Image (cartoon, rainbow, N blue to C red; front, side, top):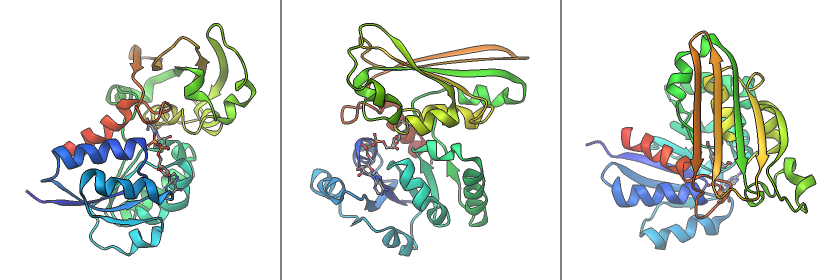
Length: 264
Ligand SMILES: NC(=O)c1ccc[n+]([C@@H]2O[C@H](COP(=O)([O-])OP(=O)(O)OC[C@H]3O[C@@H](n4cnc5c(N)ncnc54)[C@H](O)[C@@H]3O)[C@@H](O)[C@H]2O)c1
């Protein structure tokens, strides 16, 4: 079996979950050769935790100088994608977790062009949702598509779109945002990657409607997707456990990337 060289950009909650799985289950298939994080401690602590010895860096040039990377896993931030994606899509196949960056359609199209020039693939994981194969199949006849995301105050805390509510005592569920996926990701960059993922498989970020509900009693991250068209109607309902390390991230998001690695 060919062993692939894999590099990680971002070693937080999701990166660690994926590295854990690779070390324990896919070590015959993947060789972890580089960990990049602008918080070096997050990368360094994984060396002893998993007894691995990749290059550790916070400098993108170290990654760009390597000529033996097969696959890059980005689990950092939208800002990191905006900063580095143009260069790293030339190096290897890449899985992007911070899909929110792709709400800029020109940026995304340029990335796709750049990657294909170098014979590399951009892989968009389903992340914290599913059903994207069915949505993709009917995309030309969708007339309306929406995602309703319900999270606890703690999961939304820190987002620009939540700033007016940080000190509120919620006693019942409350709608705090309605608008397009393009606007939602600007206000909730760490919470609404799913809306942009949905938009890439459906009608795009300007025609995907988003509602964000804050619910003081909800324990999980919940996403309900509704779409209609000539094909009929579809509804998908996700109630997801949070990542232990990051309440903004659903555990399914990491698992969706692990599935990509199993199939790679
Ligand atoms: N696609 C989805 O459905 C989905 C679901 C959940 C989270 N996400 C996104 O995936 C990403 C990772 O999520 P997480 O829960 O692991 O986040 P996290 O905050 O736990 O980890 C992110 C790590 O990346 C590092 N980082 C951030 N910006 C960086 C940069 N510019 N350069 C280098 N390192 C950088 C941080 O230091 C941190 O160690 C986030 O962008 C998050 O919004 C996507």
